[in-house]
Image (cartoon, rainbow, N blue to C red):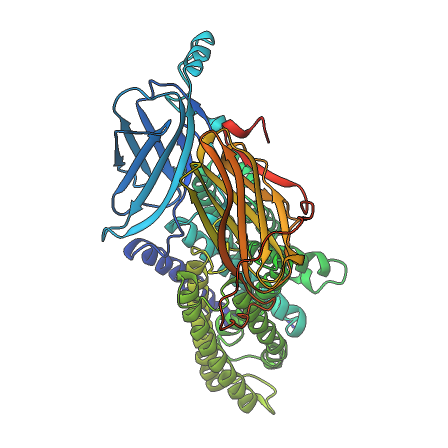
Length: 613
């Protein structure tokens, strides 16, 4: 066979223009329409910083958010228990809220409760920024010969946000282009190895590989730059400084995977320049392994949620199988079926049909695992679930079109020894339609990544299933007790004390099943004031009995004792089903001798609780 096949080169420009056109359409979609998605908004950096210290002369609070604020924002500031006049204004960039403070702040803890609204004046997100006020901060700054740290936020004090909780148009565009380029490159190389070893001899194939690689590089650089700027609370342009990419290692596994993706995509150029390396026995493992690792990084874009280890396996399997399926379809539509040819083209079509069938099965099964793990029954109640439903419809349509295309290929090429013009034209349209639907699926996947799944919290963990607020007026104790997953067995426990600011002692929680006291659990909480405490991952609270429970809260505060404050809640069965409800009301169960705490508690102390923690 000759080194090149000139009769097919005329289609190289068409393939390149098609991919560039797809990228341009994605850009227009990101600019001309509403933002693809907004995850729940959150502060990525602030002045003063969360938990930081400032002076009574603080003139303004500056908060930078992960996502654009399309409407207004409100801020209610309470310092040392007294309200303070504050006037918030959303900046021109849409992500900065500057709150002007009237008067001097009292010393103590300040809580800035913020709420953002969309363009229709509907509440978008809310949260609390806490910091302390101390006259000693001003003295320390004066002694150092520097302005107070509250005037401007230093780079060292800026917090790095989570890569899984930020979203923007450039992030979506970069993610989609990167996914398309990497997936098509890897899937095409798999088809070369499995069914079309003659592929690297075609000029059109060589140009196709290089074009998809360039799309992957451009998309990955846009994605990493946008992600780097977003986690630091800075602009998209600032993310193009490679020095800032190291901050992504502090932004969770999605951030680390983004940096690794650049490395593997660039390394894939070694294969793209000489695609025959994937069929050379001395280099094929490395040549196919590098693009495969680039695809694997796509599966690390979301690592939280319940059954996280299973989720990583399912996610990686999903992206690898998807790349084989989608990449192979694009190769057939743009290269193999671009015109008539010899018997090797027939073998390529048959070979892809054999490879794609298990890839489709793995894609669907792993996708269902992720659906159950991340959304469960909350498909209609969350943005992530609703976009997932659209994606499911698109995937089902892609499967239907794909099966039709494969039936057509079997009928047309059953006894064929070469690919004729008419057969190539009909099959190219069929596989081209399948590839076009695949692009729609990837667009929806990029959009879906901007939402938080129904069963995942903003910090990447499972959502708190049980929330028990406690507000005891006699002692002034105000706190919230959170449990997850709210099922029989081990449960994570988190306690958030809002007041009093200091002077809390003997804070103890006792969990009592109303079916009997022998399974009750007591946990001491090492907080002495406002702050939060959470059980370590290896020491969950054993709530083994499904059904109704009582929470008994005891503590002593400067204004009195909170003794046996009671809240009732329900624990589901281990499989998530609701336990049967008894007709007669269950009498209150008295506490019996309590067992020892189940394990240590990890704390996230406020300034007042640091010493105690």
